[in-house]
Image 1 (cartoon, helix red, strand yellow):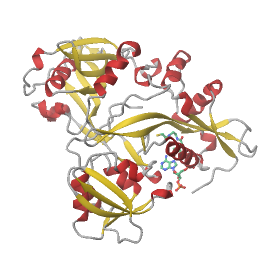
Image 2: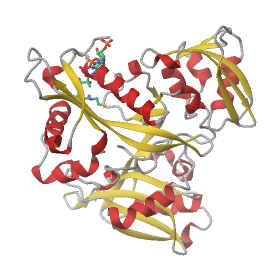
Image 3: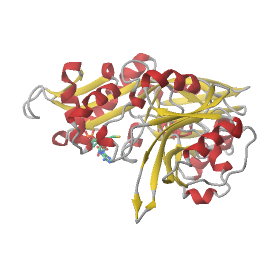
Image 4: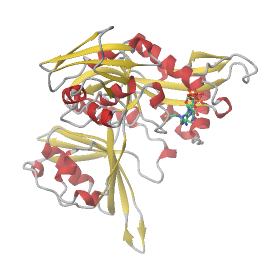
Length: 420
Ligand SMILES: CC(C)(COP(=O)(O)OP(=O)(O)OC[C@H]1O[C@@H](n2cnc3c(N)ncnc32)[C@H](O)[C@@H]1OP(=O)(O)O)[C@@H](O)C(=O)NCCC(=O)NCCS
C-alpha cells in the first residue's frame, strides 16, 4: 500500500467548495455549467466534504486541494426490514496530476476512521469502475436490472390497480421530500437508502442542466389510494421523432410501491405517455414486481448490472442489525487489510432470526473469507455457497457454507433505490 506523503487530510470549508468542485470535474472528466453551481452545492453533504491538501512543494502548489470525497449520513434497510447506520460514500476523485500516489487509499482510511467514530457500521457506494473498490473491502451487495419497456406492455392484472389514482407533478423538495420519506419508512426492501440527514439531503431533487441531455426536469408520479400515497417514482421524458414517427423516451429513476396494485398502477402510468415509445430504467431489483407482472418480460430487454457496493466496517454491529431466516452456528475466519479490528475468527449464532456475533479466537474456522465476501452477502442477494462454489470463500467444515447461506439469504432481493 502506497502512503500519501506530502499531503494532509482536511475538512473542506464552504469557502473552498469551488476548489472541491474543480477536483471533481478534473477527476470525472467534465466541465460543469456555471448555472448548475447551486444544484451541486445542494447535492453535496457539505459538512462531510473532505480533501487532501498538498503540504510538500515537491508534490504541487502547497495548500492546493489534490483529492476529495464526501459521504451522506443515512440509514439503510437490511434484510427483514431492519435498519443499519450507513455512510454513502460519494464524490471521490483524485486530480489527474496526483494519481497513483496513494491518495485514494489515504481517503478511504480517513472515511473508514470517521465512519467508525460516528457509529456508522457500514459504508456503501456506487462504483464508477467495478474493479476499484474490492481492494478496500467492498462487495457487490445488490444488483439491478436495466430494462427498456415498450409502450403499453401487457400485464397480468392485479386486483385493485384500476381503483388507484395518480398525480403527476414536477419534483420539488418542499412539496415532496416528506412524502417520499414517509413512503420509504414503510418499505422493506434491503438496500433501500433512506433520506440522508444534514446538508445534501435534497440531493435526490437536484437537477443540473448539464446532466439533462435534452430531457425535461425530474417529475414525480404519486399513486394514491383514496388520497393516501402508496407508490412514487421520479421520471423524466424526452421527445424524439423521425419522419413523423414519435420515438420519445421516459427515464425512471428511484421508485417504490407499498402494494402489488400500487406497483402495477405506477408502471402502467410510466409506460403510457403520449409520444413516448420506450420507458427506460436502471432501478429494478432482480425480483421487482414489474418483472412478474409483465406478460412478456423478455420484451423488456433486461440486463443485470451491479447496483450498490457494501463494506462492513463494524462486523458484529452490522451483522446484528439484520434479520436471519434460519438458525445457524458457524465460525468464520475473516481477513480485513484496511480495518484490522475486523480480522480474526468470529462465531455467528442465529436463533429465531437474531444473530449473536462474538470473537472466537483460537477456534477452528468453518469458513474463511475476506471482509469483501461477507459484505457481498450482507444484504442477502448473493449466497455464501455461491461464493464458495466460485472459490472465493473457503469451506473447511463440509455443509457450513450452506448453513450460513440459508440463514443469510433474503426472501426479497436487495436494491438501492437512490443513486447518490
Ligand atoms: C480511481 C482513483 C480514485 C484512484 O486514485 P489514486 O489516488 O490514483 O489511487 P491510489 O494511488 O490510492 O491507488 C489505490 C489502489 O487502487 C489501484 N487503482 C487505482 N485506480 C484504479 C482503477 N481505475 N482501476 C483499478 N485499480 C485502480 C491502484 O493500483 C492501487 O493499488 P495497490 O494498492 O495495489 O497499489 C483516481 O484515479 C480517480 O479519481 N479517477 C477518476 C474518478 C473515479 O473513477 N473515481 C472513483 C469513483 S467511484
